[in-house]
Image 1 (cartoon, rainbow, N blue to C red):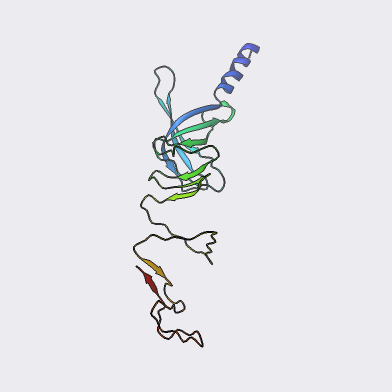
Image 2 (tube, rainbow, N blue to C red):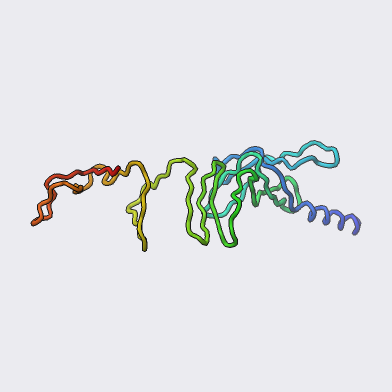
Length: 187
């Protein structure tokens, strides 16, 4: 191989180390997520090139599965188009907009989000259920009032200690609730 052809080959490999594509399928069942990526036409009028089983590198502590149609940035190890990895992805239609400098957010395609802004933390569940599960305890500490706006609030659940409500009989000398409830609903 001549020096000029070796330089041309190295140039091609370097030029092919980065690319972009569009995710067509994802598989999140394995130890690392993989995707099928449409890399566009190869050459001026060539066929579309689909790269299959491309590993998707994510950020530790954050998990997401990009929907079909999401844009992605890829690296190609050694400039080899058969050795790809996705290093970033974005879904244009559902990308959260309007954040300020220093703001951060977690969001999904349904419109649910958690925003960390200069004005405070904002959560919008987009009409979906919210659950806190498997907590050994939950503590709410506030320097101001805590407001709950709901048609019904269930306090106590089942198996808890009795709760005195306004109008219930309480023995004032012992503090024992004479007529109360293990479950209280506020409406």
